[in-house]
Length: 126
Image 1 (cartoon, rainbow, N blue to C red):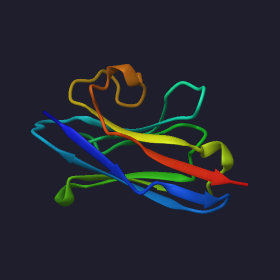
Image 2: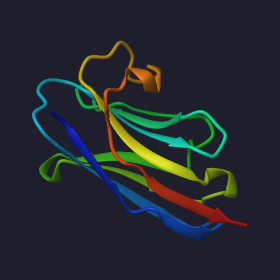
Image 3: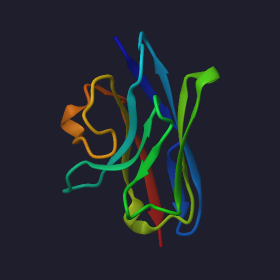
């Protein structure tokens, strides 16, 4: 069983920064796909950034390219999302997720990820 625990959300003004953390625990072998997703009220859950542990490739939604950075610290079993130059439209609950069998880490829909954290709120005020 894989467990994910996020932390690091909060409230910031536009232009500010936050760093989200996700501790990954449990038994995982081989390559897997880790992702950060977000869901704003009344909107569908969307992918923000993803990390393929096998290739170490990263993938970003167009809306966050150049502002957000996904990274992994293997020693700490932790996935990070650095959020810079935040905008009010970045306000959402942010989730980390993992999948061990995937077709395309960059584009597989959220419904294919079986493991999810509880979410952490990010609020950006103008």
